[in-house]
Image (cartoon, rainbow, N blue to C red; front, side):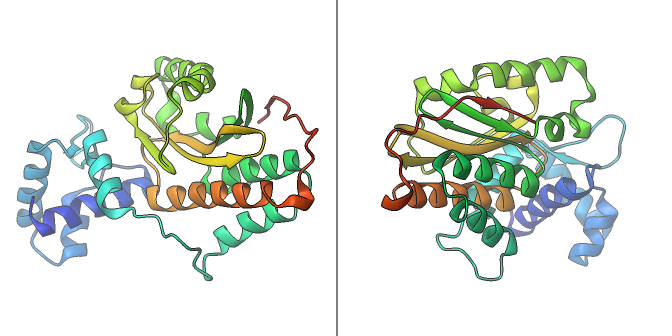
Length: 251
């Protein structure tokens, strides 16, 4: 893949995330200041390599799971420190820090992820599950198909036991579309951050949304949520050793 083809793929992923419509060659030609014929040739090569595809109802292209994976691996590096100008990160950090009780910290982190990413937000502390934003998920245009909704429901039903069994060890894990161990045909991406908690050595927070999403933004916010919860839950004054997280499934 050439450097320009990589940039075209990145632009297609980002544009498709924003407008939810297949991306045409004319837009890319304007963006890269080359001819439409040149862009069509590059897009044809990206399609041949399996990074994008052409829906049969449109002349534009959309990313494939392989295309999203390449984008995440090459263009979505999560910063290690919070940028002072990122208001969304500051808002998330503030709501966790001001929560007080551990349960409220977890709820605030989940609810803030829902608000900022427009995905479903969830957190697991041991065997307890906190969830919110289900209407966000099923309100996306991707999930108008009943069969796909059932796949999403299957993924959600099995998410907690799978996390308990698999226990992903990476600080941030991204499972795209077919990479999901359950609900492979759901067209979803699961982005989760593992964090240390006094209540469980298997604590996670993350989001579930369509494969069409702003990966850099969501990955950054999920990573920040995990960092804030770990820091605050280990801050001595706020820990109540008798606290037992309660199961919470709310929209």
